[in-house]
Length: 213
View (tube, rainbow, N blue to C red):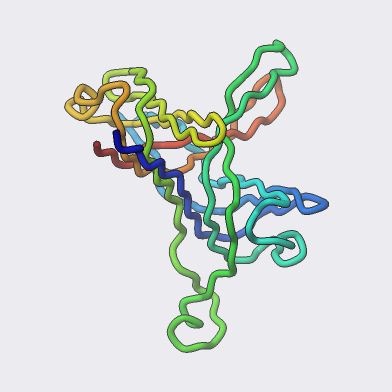
């Protein structure tokens, strides 16, 4: 039996709005303001607030000296991947699955003037927020008639099962999916600010843009 090829690649293009860390470990927050709000009968269906992906880096990241090389306001291109892990809830003590983004490599982006004429400019290429996944469909949960959550197994050396939400999911596509088969997904990272017990918690999730078998 031919071994299935797992794909887990993310690419982001945008401006650094926050960078922090120490000793080679840290996070970068990028502004990728793509319009993804979905409305149904005038009501926001998915509660999107912004698209500011947060990516983690560490000493095993291909690009080294990130904290010394990049700063807030820099325009960059980031290649990375998604990884799930379990985290213990401080209040309830329950284990919660979290999806995190990790930097593989990061490079400076050029302005459009630099690309065209070799001189500095103020206008940069459009933001990019794309995640390409190919893995085994491990679960399907329908929230409503048009919203479904897909669970995709991207495990290699370590367990890596992630959830991706499909808003306005065509009924014929969802009904045609079967657990255990390989799916190819184009997604984006959506970040939402919520308030829980007066504490602001930022979280991010994968939103399906397209899918095929």
